[in-house]
Image (cartoon, rainbow over all chains, first blue to last red; front, side, top):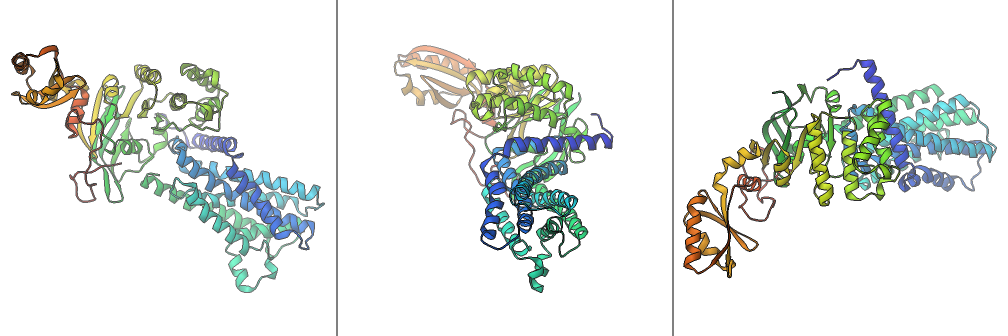
Length: 255
Length: 335
């Protein structure tokens, strides 16, 4: 058996992660579950909490971008992985010659690219139709990229729960997403929160994504944009840890 | 002889339920190795451990000299897996399924399309290559699933119940393919409860029962070891069906089984039983329509080893209390 060098191995694993991503994009992006939870839900949420409230177009775009990045990215993992476990196709991926981390990176990218696409659409609508402008485009790009990967990794934690029933996963993942939404300064700005509420908000990575979008679109936020970027980067990496642990547990349990 | 697979003290508990109980066996390179057992005996659990899908509780698996627990990735490149259910992507076309697998197994870019075409033609799916698999029949999905498992030309192929539920033509095509792959040097690990299939295909078989290996040998040697399940099959007229009890009472008959319009009488000495059957027929004024001596089939051996009565309902899982952690040797089913 040929033992490839580490560089070749890394190249192979990246190619395999990309293969998983492309396959999932083809197979699942147009599935009703993905469209419902990943595409329609953030827009419903936005309109539910924004219509008939006095809000500048730019403020609305910043909120919508945080919503699409968060909701869309976190929708993929809880939908796709339990579905694949139920159909037996996940075994095909687990038996393939790649590391678990490679598989998880590939799956993370699926949600992330979906969120980037939906966020880009939201941005086009915000700028093109509502006339909003973007104050710091590079920050916007970095925020959408990092936020999408971080929240997709968050969704992956729920997808990694050892079960073959997507329903077992949707419930806790939806609960968490809704919970985070209301404590993260999306609907009530961080600056208007009390001390305790703000302390709670700092626990949520969505707080940093929203603040980053405020910087990028409105030109200012409460926290440092570098802190926001750093938190999203670190949380994205940390979110992979429980996913790895739960996959190892699944392998022991036989899921 | 080189070993493709070496299994040492392999054990699996689900919670406190013992599914596989310290089993040991080797699979030689280039052979078709059958892994037989009743439902719940531990076949699929064992195969899932061999293919890294399930972590053993104890024990060691060495594949082509590599410890599977240390670095499974290079070993997995040599493996192909056809699970019991055809796990194909129904949202993709047959062509997309194959190309996806080829990329996943790092088949060189310039060979992917040629191999995909070769296998689609071999499996009679070329004309359907651009059809989404959700429109495929069960047999077509099975063929595609096998094509996906071998597109990277593995040296070790795991097949879990490859033919149940297929029509006779598809099942035969898959058996022929297994033979061809094996003739080309692929080692095949065949998990099945279809005993005749194992008899036709396998160089050696292991019989697992209640999580333990009950026997490993070639099908013919296993049959030889179970001479006591030789039999005499007799059809009598008129009203042959009514003579089961007196035939079973003949000296040397261990078990009787009604086989259609015939009686099969199990014995360890068919030559001694033959004249007794003839005498009985003559004394009762019956005509002997047919009288044959039969060697034990692999199915007889299987039923004998797994403790199921010869001629009873086939493949019925034994009932019993599950074995629990720390109580080895009791009856029970695995998973």
